[in-house]
Image 1 (cartoon, helix red, strand yellow):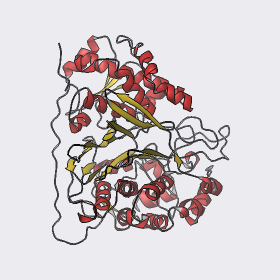
Image 2 (tube, one colour):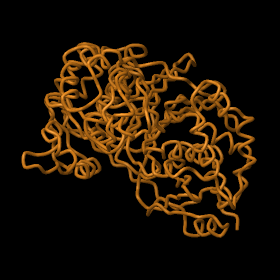
Image 3 (cartoon, one colour):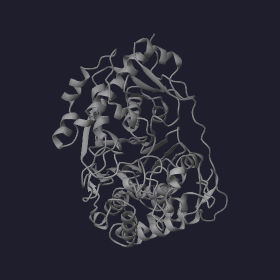
Image 4 (spheres, one colour):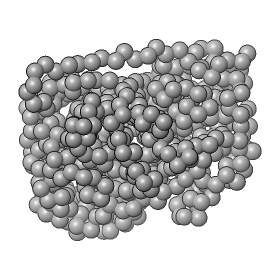
Length: 551
């Protein structure tokens, strides 16, 4: 039986609007004036995983900032208000489309110190031993200094305010803090900032105030990040980390630099694809889509289509280990290589990925945000700690969590090596004009989410909000995993049709398990921006109600 391309049954998420009364300035503990998961504006857009972060970016746009300023504001803000998913002690990858059409990228991932010895280093899941050199601050400061227009102190203002005055903890982050509370309690600084005096975690609806983090952020803002890597913050970090068994030294902090990213490109049915290469996974998404370009997906029935998408992703994940140098980048993003891999698709025998990758597909961490302005600048920014609450370590006096980087979490790492992950900031262009900027959170499910959304949009012809809402399929160690949680997933008939093909299916009912997309679509003819926040999360999309500088 042939089924329509829209394979699922999912009602539109209700959009709730909160209007602030009066003309007094917004306080950090007040809700943003609008909490939407789909929004439209001709003045730009911000989409992020936490309403306060989205609002921070929009405020900066309305104050005259551009998309880079808004992204930096939202990124510092979300490091405060979504602390289980990301931090200034973590890593950041940034993709920027400039109004002149140029694309730039910033690699600010965490790094193994030059003194790190993988042979003798402790293998651990959390704690001081897993902490690497943080990159987020360097990446955000570089984004603002090279591409922004406002002073860093202005852009960081909302984040500082949220930390000092406090913010209301959302249910999702409260649940994650509770899940990490036992491990967090092992460390003095983490107990101080993320547990109550009686040792219990904060609950949803309670206000979290972090005055030490506010002071840390103020010092970063006043010194353009210098204090974090070569000043008093660096000295405090190094003393605590060294005293507790971390490989991070003051010299490794002094030496850290946010580097140019390796941009990779491809195309899919008339759209230009733009991503970032190792240590990110843009090439995985490009390869999977270019494999799929060899098949007429729009003319297939649902079961066939699902099998092809899952198979293409499985093949691209297999090739993840082939990636490394520029020659490998050119190969895996070439049309010839995609055609070669496409010829290997056998619906009765899906591409098998390694058990290690299958385990990574269970991840649900990280945060992604997207921003755009009325001049055509677009930013895709992914920021992470690794697993929930990262290393679980906070240095007393500073207030932020460190990412998990070493100890085997991201595989074996050599001295000076940067953490490799499935982060995937991504863009679609058409005729040289930006059409879409997106990315996702969710560990190895990040490129899975990106590819599924692009296929729904391009092949399915779905509007961008529906393409993000539509269910997703990913590879597994055997067969496929399919998103089937209530209100979001495939119909039972579709699942059974796939099984009838002899394919092994593992249904995943947990919301957010297939990544969380926060993206923006552009309509060049009208100049309108459409922001979308993944309905599987608590984030929002919001465009300015007025132009830059109040115009």
